[in-house]
Length: 202
Image (cartoon, rainbow, N blue to C red):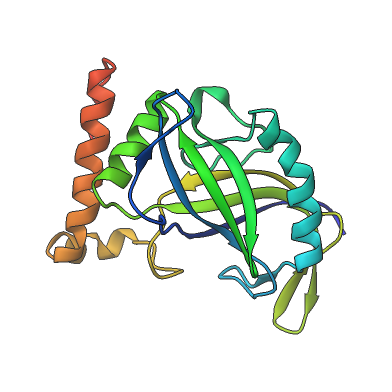
């Protein structure tokens, strides 16, 4: 079995509203579920609680040393690209089988975009990035003991797994009210990028 880049995404539901940090930085903070153990996820993968506990214990070193950063959008890489960093995880804890996190949104270009999206009620996904192998057991891919957690990123993700739009569906989508959230997100992203001197057509 060879190690692969394992990416797991789920909708991020903040617990309460965005709050300002009390640590003196003034940066926005948000809390929510980062991952769930002992369930078959949308990618058909299953992570045991023992694997997650081991990796969270190791990850806490990064949290305590203020370097548990992640990116806005998922690169297909095992390296965290500092120019795309949007947030820093300040605390991680268990709530039953849920892995919870307190996240500081950084005042970087990517962090400002993330904050604006959350402020405006745009649903984003939180996605773990790690390396490891899987073993097929029936219809489930069981993540093996060689799994290594790298970080959590924020990503755009549909509410329903597998609901990515294909080009042939675009015209129908443009006539649907459901496209309004995506248009609003693009408008916010464009305004923020323009404030940094780059105005892409999106």
